Image 1 (cartoon, protein in one colour):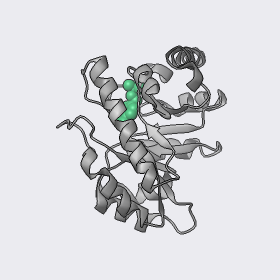
Image 2 (tube, rainbow, N blue to C red):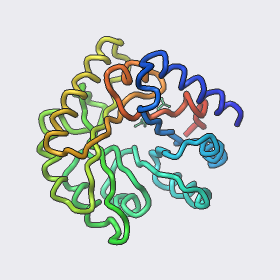
Image 3 (cartoon, rainbow, N blue to C red):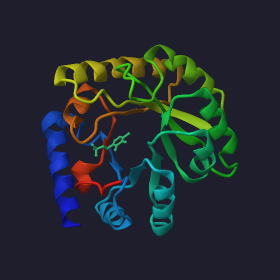
Image 4 (cartoon, rainbow, N blue to C red):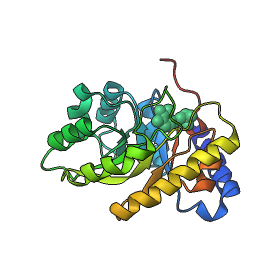
Length: 226
Ligand SMILES: *Cc1c(COP(=O)(O)O)cnc(C)c1O
């Protein structure tokens, strides 16, 4: 658990070195998939409050064990229609929204007594066959539709750049996201979140203009095997 403290210090140093003026404004989403509830508890004791999970059942199990903490849960995994109800009922954010029918379901299934579900539209910025996400061209049209759904609140955009691309290619992809985010803010003035950058590419993302980094292994260490 002491490792998490050390890893968090290193993480903050990396951010400070890459973009000193951003250290206090960029948010860290602690990606806790295949990490134990004890690790999440330890991270929360260090002041982290936002946790990202990819696997629904695993996340629900950990939420029960951590019910005494006041954590903010982000769903960042693949969205399938048979999972939307439990996601709408148990998460505060979804980062991987890219289909209208899923948006409609989440809106319908979000409980009346819960605040609107915060959503980021996942953009497939590199047109990568292996990635989910809407194309940049279709992003604003989807945002317009989501804007009409009262139980969803658009917070911004999320992306995962193509694996194995060079630093300059990643920078180009992240910069395209910044541009698209500016266009989104014209139709959704309250959108404040550009979710991009992970353990290996956080420097490039934060320099380009990410507002939320999704950090797994650089914070928690290696994940348990699947
Ligand atoms: C697993 C995951 C991360 C974290 O990846 P690390 O390389 O461990 O930092 C971030 N975003 C998404 C969507 C993920 O699935």
